[in-house]
Amino acid sequence: QNTSDKTSPPKELSLPKDMTSINSITENILQSLNNNDYASFSKDFSDTLKNTITAHVFLELKNLILQTSGKYLSKSTPKLYEIAEVNAYDYPSEFEKESVFVTVSINPDSGKVEGISFDSDGLRATQTSG
Image 1 (spheres, rainbow, N blue to C red):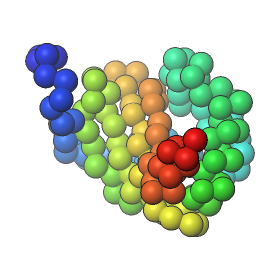
Image 2 (cartoon, rainbow, N blue to C red; image 1 turned 45 degrees about the vertical axis):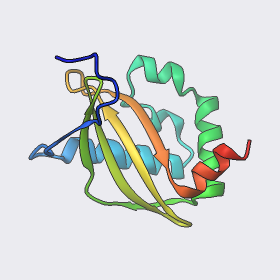
Image 3 (cartoon, rainbow, N blue to C red; image 1 turned 180 degrees about the vertical axis):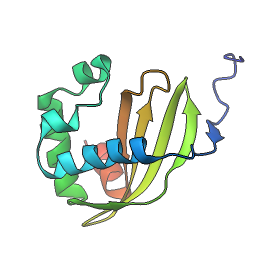
């Protein structure tokens, strides 16, 4: 595999036929944010991600998203990208105040969540304002 070209865009893959597992993992993460439930939020995380997104980080993330985007309402069908050997599911999602792209990265071997990110106009604005 070619690792020298770091600038190539992520490769889009077709979605697996059975999306039940990834959809329920993602839904659980988003509902857990609404419910302020770290134990449930992080239950499908890899050990590495649990060490990165601690209960303290979760609290900051939840407060930021609540203030900026509001509570999670619903998600649509994701696009799937292969990025650095994980499968990144990019969900267009609706929150109370704005639309947010929620990306959940899954290790295809372990089925564990290796990364999660939230992207929206409102959230981007908070990052640039200090």
